[in-house]
Image: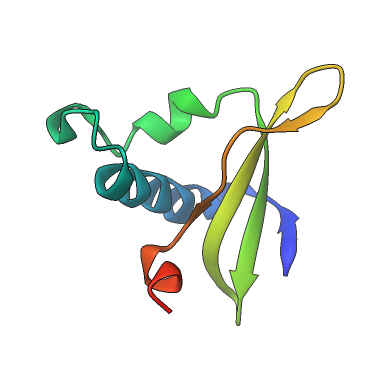
Length: 82
């Protein structure tokens, strides 16, 4: 299911954001990636959440420009491994 984010989702989304960046942002120093980055990096964005069996498995942040613009897609890494 895809739905808009609500306040109860924030911790799960921040964790997915953090884990995704640690695993894939190899150009960044891992010590510079913080769990709290989610809050500042997504400020002002519209976020849709992906759920499977009531568990959050990913999210899509949208920039509010003249049109909605998908910035990135973040998901649990275990989903990518099959």
